[in-house]
Amino acid sequence: MKFKLFMIIVIVLCIITLSGCSRMQIEETDILTTYFAGVNEDNIVLGGGVANVRTFADSMADDPVSPIYAEGRTLVEAQDKLVKSADHPLFFGSVRAVVVSEEFAQRGISEFLESLKSDYKLRSESMFFVTESEPEKIVAHKAINDFSGGFAAESMLENLEAEGRIVCSDISDMFETAYEEKTGIACACVDVSGDIMSFDGYAVFDKERLIGFTNEKETDGVNAFLNKKSTFDYYIEGVKYTLIKSGERKKARLDNGFLTFDFDFDFECKVYNEMTDESFSDVRIALENNVSESLNAAFERVKESKCDFLNLYRIYQKDFRYEFENCDYGEQLAHAQANIGVNVKKPKRGSVSV
Image (cartoon, rainbow, N blue to C red; front, side, top):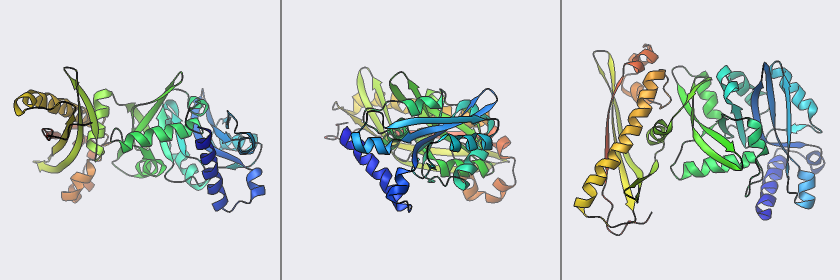
């Protein structure tokens, strides 16, 4: 653990050094690792975690990150107070994760995103996520194997995405959504309860504003639609089945002005037990129904919200660019239909390990 924390500090210092800072400048800089935005009644709250590079490098401290925060009536006022409250100039180039609270996101994040890119030059690939609890909890989270709560959240989300379990968003994704017409995004939500940090579904944004959160079925559906290697575990009669998406086909049609999407998804199946064609037949139906229910739930949420957080517009405009650019897309989504096909392939003999 100590070695890992040491290596993270080395990486952070390298980032700063490559940005042109001398050793003396590093010692006189507060290195921000996590940045958050929230709301306290009518005030904007900004803050984050500052790496204690000086004490950590010397003693490998158990608390290598110190919280910092400030609030103001406006975003600019809160930013000004945050900068002035730091012991040294704040360095934002090392921020790995940006988290916003539910209430802050509901008010709109375009001004906040603009400040990240123009005022503080945050890396566009910095992880972005939402929390329904106080964002301060993310910063204060004591991570066992990570340098800070922000690093822990970033590592958790990146690992889940690499395993095909979720899709993640960064600052660039959020910025693009906030300023593009006819788009939305499903952004990861992270929760901290006691000592446990966990992925908690998706926060749905219509352009710059949070409009709701996905339930469990919708969450699985979002992953099935958007992750090229989406992976799910299902338990049927005590047996674990792991499905991994292996192919997909998507097409849009216009029938008398009404929009219809045709989807077909293929999944490979992995299971511990050897199975005959006969024994797998009923299981396959159950698995396909489970995936289909999740896909339909996510699509219905798009229709209900009139918000395209599944990137369906990319399919639509591919063959109907003129119609897409000249339509009321929200209303078209509200009346759109989907034909969703799911095909689960029988496990191959000898490939039953999960």
